[in-house]
Image 1 (cartoon, rainbow, N blue to C red):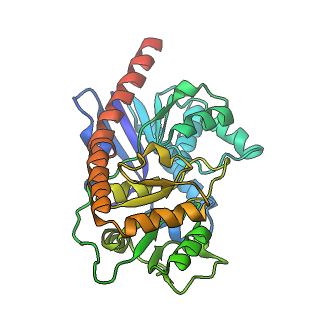
Image 2 (cartoon, one colour; image 1 turned 120 degrees about the horizontal axis):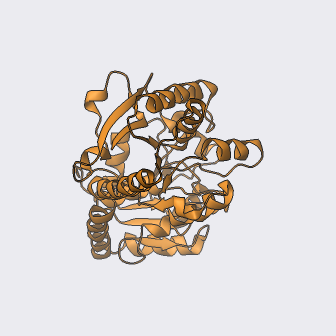
Length: 346
């Protein structure tokens, strides 16, 4: 079956450079065409607002229309906005085509008119791929769709070369990422332990917070600099704030750290439990527990053998479960299932 792929990372002028999971789908049953957006997507961490702007929605609508118009079979979308715009264009064109919504994460499940718009625009999506198990039930209740339409596939990242070693002369902790981070508890912990810490986050996540003397927070650093910090840090920490309305957070930073074989401490909430096996591939701590976080940091900071073992286990586990290769196999199975169902109902 032919599939058009509408993703935010494909834009006019760089289609020949796109590397995505379609190249890793086994067999030759499916063919793929990438549909570009008219301009590159901006850096989410540097945006003034977490809400998608009107201009962005117009770009998504144009890309969604092109994906529907140009497919000979179905559409694969990446990000919820594109799933919605493909659904809108599909209904306007009066075409019933199979749609797979990959990386479907809406952040929070809004009520009122936004909920109604989501229900209407996403009505004909055949399969939603979510990256935590809790999202299956949350989205099913929110959209009032059968839970069987939501499938958990772990978030994946490609292999990340490890080009930097742990900084043993000036050791430090690293906390990377922005979404729903519990920096207040982390700051209390590092202040109590008097341990140097680098926080690589966006301005919005740090607004209103006073940084302890032990903490540095370079603003505006790039992706490669973040990866370097993660590799050089003695421990990577992902402190999260629990919120029943939030669907998931921290998975990108978490999987990247695991792919690089880093020792990790993360809060036991927002779907992180689907990625870390406590005591085997990392440490899970109770969210917003200062005592729990202090104890975990102290334990790992002073035990190099434990850090090495956790890091090696994390990398092996991530290679098996969170790699592009693993996700490509999962995508192939999803496409086979959706195509089979669609062909039976035609």
